[in-house]
Length: 98
Image (cartoon, rainbow, N blue to C red; front, side, top):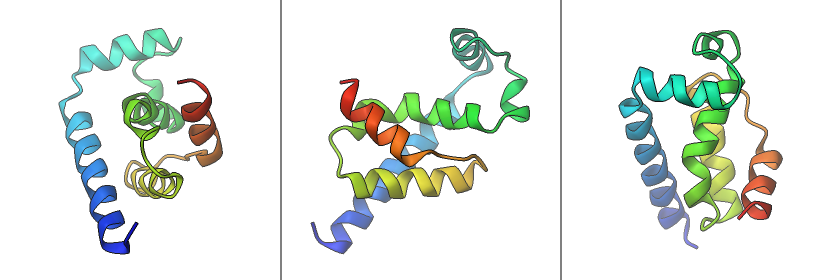
Protein backbone atom coordinates (compact mmCIF):
# COMPACT_ATOMS: atom_id res chain seq x y z
CA UNK A 1 0.00 0.00 0.00
CA UNK A 2 1.47 3.34 -1.01
CA UNK A 3 2.06 5.98 1.63
CA UNK A 4 -0.31 8.41 -0.11
CA UNK A 5 -3.12 5.83 -0.32
CA UNK A 6 -2.55 4.81 3.32
CA UNK A 7 -2.87 8.45 4.44
CA UNK A 8 -6.10 8.86 2.47
CA UNK A 9 -7.58 5.75 4.08
CA UNK A 10 -6.59 6.93 7.57
CA UNK A 11 -8.07 10.39 6.94
CA UNK A 12 -11.30 8.89 5.59
CA UNK A 13 -11.73 6.58 8.58
CA UNK A 14 -11.04 9.42 11.02
CA UNK A 15 -13.44 11.78 9.24
CA UNK A 16 -16.16 9.13 9.30
CA UNK A 17 -15.68 8.37 12.99
CA UNK A 18 -15.53 12.05 13.85
CA UNK A 19 -18.82 12.66 12.05
CA UNK A 20 -20.41 9.69 13.83
CA UNK A 21 -19.21 10.98 17.20
CA UNK A 22 -20.62 14.38 16.30
CA UNK A 23 -24.00 12.76 15.67
CA UNK A 24 -24.08 10.75 18.89
CA UNK A 25 -26.94 12.10 20.97
CA UNK A 26 -27.08 12.27 24.74
CA UNK A 27 -29.71 9.50 24.71
CA UNK A 28 -27.50 7.23 22.62
CA UNK A 29 -24.59 7.86 24.97
CA UNK A 30 -26.77 7.08 27.97
CA UNK A 31 -27.82 3.76 26.43
CA UNK A 32 -24.20 2.95 25.65
CA UNK A 33 -23.11 3.77 29.20
CA UNK A 34 -25.89 1.68 30.73
CA UNK A 35 -24.84 -1.27 28.59
CA UNK A 36 -21.34 -0.85 29.98
CA UNK A 37 -22.52 -0.41 33.56
CA UNK A 38 -21.51 3.23 33.90
CA UNK A 39 -23.18 6.59 33.95
CA UNK A 40 -22.97 9.28 31.31
CA UNK A 41 -20.92 11.47 33.62
CA UNK A 42 -18.14 8.90 33.88
CA UNK A 43 -17.11 9.86 30.33
CA UNK A 44 -15.65 13.01 31.81
CA UNK A 45 -14.14 11.24 34.80
CA UNK A 46 -12.75 8.28 32.87
CA UNK A 47 -11.36 9.12 29.44
CA UNK A 48 -11.12 5.39 28.68
CA UNK A 49 -14.91 5.39 28.30
CA UNK A 50 -14.43 7.52 25.20
CA UNK A 51 -11.93 4.95 23.97
CA UNK A 52 -14.59 2.30 24.44
CA UNK A 53 -17.10 4.34 22.45
CA UNK A 54 -14.59 4.84 19.64
CA UNK A 55 -13.86 1.12 19.70
CA UNK A 56 -17.51 0.15 19.41
CA UNK A 57 -17.97 2.51 16.46
CA UNK A 58 -14.72 1.47 14.83
CA UNK A 59 -14.53 -2.29 15.31
CA UNK A 60 -16.99 -3.25 12.61
CA UNK A 61 -14.88 -1.68 9.87
CA UNK A 62 -11.42 -2.00 11.42
CA UNK A 63 -11.16 -5.74 10.82
CA UNK A 64 -10.99 -4.99 7.10
CA UNK A 65 -8.10 -2.55 7.52
CA UNK A 66 -4.37 -3.03 7.83
CA UNK A 67 -3.03 -3.13 11.43
CA UNK A 68 -0.89 -0.06 10.79
CA UNK A 69 -3.92 1.93 9.71
CA UNK A 70 -5.83 0.80 12.79
CA UNK A 71 -2.92 1.87 15.00
CA UNK A 72 -2.65 5.28 13.36
CA UNK A 73 -6.39 5.94 13.59
CA UNK A 74 -6.40 4.93 17.26
CA UNK A 75 -3.42 7.15 18.03
CA UNK A 76 -4.87 10.18 16.27
CA UNK A 77 -8.35 9.82 17.72
CA UNK A 78 -6.97 8.96 21.14
CA UNK A 79 -4.96 12.16 21.09
CA UNK A 80 -7.86 14.22 19.73
CA UNK A 81 -10.33 12.94 22.34
CA UNK A 82 -7.69 12.92 25.10
CA UNK A 83 -8.02 9.25 25.93
CA UNK A 84 -5.66 6.35 26.33
CA UNK A 85 -5.87 3.71 23.65
CA UNK A 86 -4.62 0.19 24.16
CA UNK A 87 -3.71 -0.58 20.57
CA UNK A 88 -2.96 -4.25 21.11
CA UNK A 89 -6.24 -4.80 22.95
CA UNK A 90 -8.22 -3.14 20.20
CA UNK A 91 -6.46 -4.97 17.38
CA UNK A 92 -6.69 -8.32 19.13
CA UNK A 93 -10.36 -7.81 19.98
CA UNK A 94 -11.17 -6.91 16.41
CA UNK A 95 -9.37 -9.94 15.02
CA UNK A 96 -10.64 -12.51 17.49
CA UNK A 97 -14.22 -11.35 18.08
CA UNK A 98 -15.37 -11.33 14.47
